[in-house]
Image (cartoon, rainbow, N blue to C red; front, side):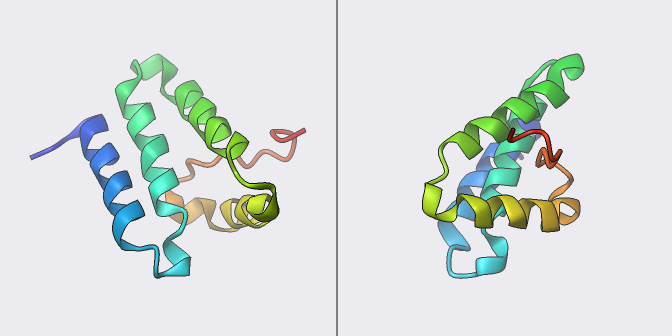
Amino acid sequence: MLTGAARHAAFAAGQAAVVAHVAAHELGAAAYAIKAVRAAAPTDEAESAGRLECHWQRDRLPEAIRALVLDDQRLRNDICWSVFDVDPDAEA
């Protein structure tokens, strides 16, 4: 049985592969990837590593959907384990 970072990475891959047909699940793969990065980092660096991963993902969003994804992250952060950096100054 997988645990820690490997488990979250597997969930991220699975989420990306099998739930694309359900719009409400589009944040799952990104959230699990952030959880995997946090789990792989030393405990005292987990939050920072998660924020870096979140920003790395955002930097790769196509401009056409960027505002939609960021809005969805703000709206659904609580159900995604609060992994998205939704600080209003984070994108400035």
